[in-house]
Every structure is written in C-alpha cells, then in structure tokens.
Length: 377
Image (tube, rainbow, N blue to C red; front, side, top):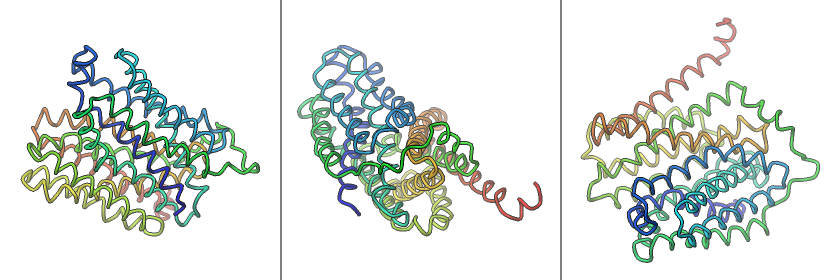
C-alpha cells in the first residue's frame, strides 16, 4: 500500500477521536463554560449532524478541485476549527466550531475515499479502504480513551489541541504526496454524478450500510450500561476486534465480498442476539462483535464505492453519508430500546437492524436474479 494512505489514515484517526472524545468530558466542560451538561451534549449532536450534511455538500463544493487541494483545504479547516474551539470561552462559538469541524471531516473523508481509486489498482481497493478506515477503528481503541485521560489530566481544551497537532503531519503529507487529478480526467457534471443515486444496486447497498452501521453504533453507545465497572476493558476489546475485522475484510473483500457478507451477516445477527440474551458473556463477545460489525460495515462501504464508481467525485460522500446516517439513527433507536427493555435493549435493537439488513439483502438478491427478471415479476 502507498505510504500516503497510512498518513491519510492518521488524519482519519484524529477526526474519529475528535468525534467521540468529548463525550466523557462533558461535566467539566459544562462547568467551565457555564452551561448544563445537557446543553454541552449538543456538541456531540452538532458534530454528527455536520457529518451527515457535510458529506455531499462539501464533496460537491470541492469536486472541481484536485484531490490534493480538496484534502488539504478540508484538513486545514478541521485543524483551524479545533484551535478556535480550544481558545474560546463562549459555548456558542465552541458549538459552531464543532459543526465546522464536522463539515470539514465529512468533506475530507468523502474525498479521501474517492482518492483511493487514484492511488491503488482496482484489485486492491478494498484493502486500501481498510487501511483508511482503520483510522476510525483505532480511534475507538486508543484515541477516545487517550483523549479522556488527557482531558482528565489537563482539561478538555487539551484534547482539542491534541487533535489539531495530530492532524498537522497528515496535512503536510497531503500537500507532498497526494496526486492531482490528471487534466484529461475533468469531473463529470454534478447532475450526472447525482443521477447514479437512482440505481437500484446503489440504493440497496446504501440501505444496507445505514442499517448495519445503525446497529453497530447504537449498541456501541450503550455498551457501558452492560459493562458497568469494566467499561474501559470492554471498549478496548470491542475496538481491537473492530480493527482486526476491518483489516481482515480488507484482505478478502476485493475478491470474496459476496461470501464474506453471506457468512458474516448472519454471524453478526447471532452475536447481537447472544449479547441480548446472555449479557454475562459480554467480555468474550465484545471483540467478536467488534470484528464482525466493522468487517461487514467496511465491506459495505467498499461495495458503495464500487456501485458508485461512475460518480468519481461524489461516490465517497455517498459512503460517508450512509455511515453517519447509521451513526445518528442507531443511538436513537438503541436509546428507545434501552428505555423499554433495560441494558439488553440496545443489543436487541442491533439484532433487529441487522436482521432487517439481511432481509433487504435476500430480497435484493432474489429480485435481481436472472430467473426473476426473466419471469417479469
């Protein structure tokens, strides 16, 4: 893999850490800025909303720029937003910087996913995507816990400075190593790339991506309710499993994605049901569920990119939007399940979302089969 991919993954690591690390620091942050903890919680909501809105919006804004220019601009804006957030004493300004950082994060990830096609041959794209998305899983393993420790020791502002400093080498790498788009490969008209969204195959895989990621992030959000005093250990085990799942899927998904999804999907459903019915098995299940959930999720992102290959500047935004719509929807549904069924509720919700994804996949495979098409049904 080109070394620049690992530097891009470093930026994704910093961005993934930023998205989640303030959640554990809300009481201190709220006290420092004179707001309630509930109001401080809007910082997480603002980031999530910015990711969903920014995926297509920022990709469209930067689509006529060379990849190097777009990635550098988004990353510079991300760094600047964190510096401004670390310096302010005004909660409204901090809230605005979180939304701006999320927009920049969404734009960066959308363009980075599309840029993979310029850096590696088609037969290695799933593996390259796994390297890039490995930054997100490493954020769950190391970035979020490290940010919480840093915030406890030096204050919440230190976490924002740490993210900005961590992203700076990636900015230098983008300027030095990411290629420009060849002159002959001018971007297609925006309406042409948006028209790809009408394709049934792309719609199907986008729905699958939303459902699977909703189950994953919904259950992940409430793992602490099951873990009790073992929260750091459980989150670390889940994150390690997620990293291994993304890495393993990256090596298999280029050639064997159908088989990978056919086996991993039902296993993931079984795992969520096992957790819901036997919460005491959380420790051994955590790494397995992390591996299955993120292995399936990263494979689906690769399939979104493949289905949207005729939208070279916007395809990455479609994958980013599916990931983050799931990340927004999942905790809402898991929270409702938690209220209704207690600590096991989010795992039941994840199982339901995964079962829905499997049902969609089975229906799609049947309706797209040659025999079905030939019958006129």
